[in-house]
Amino acid sequence: MNGNNDYYRLKYHLMPSVGFLNDPNGFIQFNGEYHLFYQFNPLYPKDKMVYWAHVKSSDLIHWTMLSPALCPSEWYETHGCYSGSAVNNNGKLTLIYTGNVKNKLGKRETYQCIAQSIDCEHFVKYKNNPVISNVPTGYTTHFRDPKVWKYNELWYMAIGTQTEKEEGVVLLYSSQDLLAWNKIGEVAGANTNGLNYLGYMWECPNLFNLDGKDILLFCPQGVEPKGDLYNNRYQCGYLLGKLDYKTGKLAYGDFIELDRGFEFYAPQVSRDEKGRLLLVGWMGIPEEEDSPTVKNNWLHCLTIVRELHLKNNKIYQNPVEEIKLLRTNETRYDNVLINNEQIKLDNIYGDCFELICDFSWENVLEFGIKLRCDDKENEKTLLYYNTEEEKIILDRCKSGLSKTGVRKCKIEKCKKLSIRLFMDKSSVEIFINKGEETLSSRIYPKKESKNIFFYAEGGIVNVNIKHWNI
Image (tube, rainbow, N blue to C red):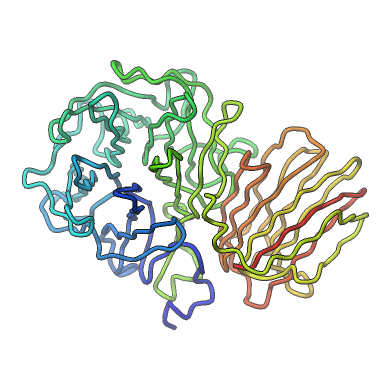
């Protein structure tokens, strides 16, 4: 089968036409247009070489594919152009990335490099690359994913790495010209400031200010599960505090997971010309490639673009306002009472839609939504709230060809719950209480499984429902 004929291909998410997609890179608004790059291997699974794919958009919804921005061609990137970021350097769209090499002994070498473009499409690599050629003393060659920004007329770089003791760390560098870089110090590490052991490697860092707080967002590898926390193979989360640009140290509190679903990793953050802090992530996890789409020569997708805000020292994520451009055929139900029963409503069904449900209750044990159900409910994806546990629960044990499992997250005690979700053939993104929690996941039900049911157990729940086809 041609991949383009695969039912599981998504309608409004970015995905590869063929091959393997992973980390989003270089997310930036430049001269009014949004540019987004991502790790791309067109020859997957036969080859492991990594390129930078390139798309652009005027509205964050409709994207135009351009030619690949970076292809491995030089001695410092023989085994791939790995993740990085983009900046506006005096009117030139500039990419900063990691060149990956496996030497003759099979050992890793990493080099930090730059490439520039005048026309925002064709990129020229700096003739004296790499701009950082040596791993600093005390760290391993797991040294990658530069995220660069400007602050007080200096360029800064956060880069993920690993100590020789195999502990994850993010380092801070500075530069006046993007070419000569000086190491300042460690922003944070796996065994610092009371974190205990938080993984053997930290990758894909973002360091930014949101509503007056400095935030380090990163992906630690090697974190052990802890109850409802850290249940994916690798994690993504953040530390919130105050960055000292002179020492490079971040004074921070607890590590907080950013997304509580099954597939979310390597987000890239960017501030646009409206001042919004935007995020896009990879709806996948490293080393998990057992998707039913592989047989059709494609794998993975990106999330929809989200806007970030800080509330009660927690990042809230919500879809960008432009997502409403996709809405068609609104169906609305107000004050639907569900009394210890399951119901199905006319025109509320499908495999590609936006759904908003505002629940309220006095006494009920459990209520929720059954998505992508077949007629006998042999196939279904469950999203529900248990009032005794005070937890939102996503259950994909019967979601088709997906890996099975359950994800739970605590919601502060309440008598109202808002759920906004986006279904797109083989993906679901769920936003709880206007972004308090987010769950991103892939599911692979049959084409015919399009029913949606609402239910309540142990009491009565009231719900207002809005549904749009996409």
